[in-house]
Every structure is written in C-alpha cells, then in structure tokens.
Amino acid sequence: MRDIQVLLVEDNCSTCALMRAFFDQADGLTVCGEAHDGWEGLELLREKRPDLVLLDLIMPGMDGLEFLRAAAGETGKRPKVIVLSGVVADEYVQQACRLGASYYLVKPVNLTELAGRIDTLFPKQTEQSDPGLAAWALLRLGADRESLGYRDARYALGLLAEDGGMQMKKIYLDTAEAFSTTYSRVEKNLRTLIKNIHKTGGGFYEKTLGFADREKPPDNGSFLRALAEEIRKKK
Image 1: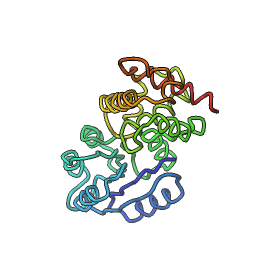
Image 2: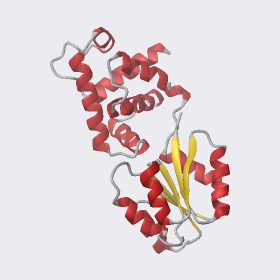
Image 3: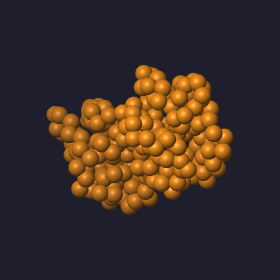
Image 4: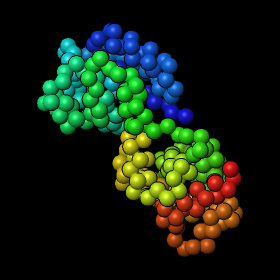
C-alpha cells in the first residue's frame, strides 16, 4: 500500500481545507505539513522530506516559482510537484514545468483530475502484483530489506506480475518514477542486490533460480523474470 507524504504550500485557507478533506478520504495519502508562503514551505520541505508538494504560485514573500528554484538546489530526495494555480498564462505554465513541476492544474481544482495525476506519479500496487510474495522471495534469497535494491526489485516484480513481457527499459523507468530517482540508479541498485545475492548463494537461490553455479551473477532481466515466474507458481 502507498504511503505518500504530501506537503501543501498554499496561502488560500479554503483551498487548504479542501485539500485536507480530500486527502483525509484518500488511501495512502497523508498531509505531512501545511505552509502559507514559500519560505515556510521551504522550511517544511527540509524538515518533512515529503514525496509530493502541492504548490500555489501567487503567495506572499517567496512565490511558487521562487520556491521551485530554491527547492531545486536542495540536497536529498526531490519531491514531485503539482502546481495548483489560478494563473493560466502560458509563460507561467512553461516556467513552472521547466523548474521541475510535474503537472500544472488550474483552479478551481478538479479533484478527480488531481487524483489521476497523483496515481500517475505514484502508481498503486495492485492485488495481482502481490508484493507480499515478492518480499518473501527476496528475503528468502538473502536480500537486505533496508537496501534500495530490495525496494526496487520488489516494485519491479510487481510490474512483471502484471505484464510478464514488459521490457527492462520500461521497468527501470517506471520504478525510477515511482521512487523519484533515476533510470541509472534503479539499474545500479538492482545490479548490486543481485551481485550480493549471487555471492552468498544458498540452497533456495540455487534450487529456485539455478544461477548459483555460474561464475558471474545473472543480468537484472534474467534474475527478475526467473524470480517473477517462481512467484507466479506460488499463487
């Protein structure tokens, strides 16, 4: 289940109340903070490290565009940003997107559209993907549950459960988008995970995937597809 932390950066109290009511009813989405100007928003961004920021553009003090510029210089995880604004001028839309906004929605906000945009940015795990089985299999193989490779492999196995023919490029891209990281980092995280599993080996690894007798670890695609097939047999 998703656990998306949302930061509201919005000076209009009515809009904040609407957003809070919306997120109170949404599964896997939690408001972790509320700021009424860009400076306050930047402080909460550093403190809360949200996954998603809902951002107004016209605010006192630091406005939304200045907030985006400042946020781009922050270290650590970069959140997704959806702009909610009454400003419809193309120059503002283009500038916000250049500065890192994923979507630009015009007020009054259509909540159905907002929900759809959030689902695109943070795909839901479906029952078919059965993340519990993926976690069980990875842990049996000796994966470190705290590692980024474990996180990425678990998500990638969910994608393969839904579409066994999905290309690795698409898997990398979708996983990177889900965790606000990059294609190359996902590929590296998975490669490191598989290398460590191959090094330690073990009966479950050899019996289940048949790679233990090889000198070199399998490539990411071979490993994930073989493990996804084993997971399907368990259902």
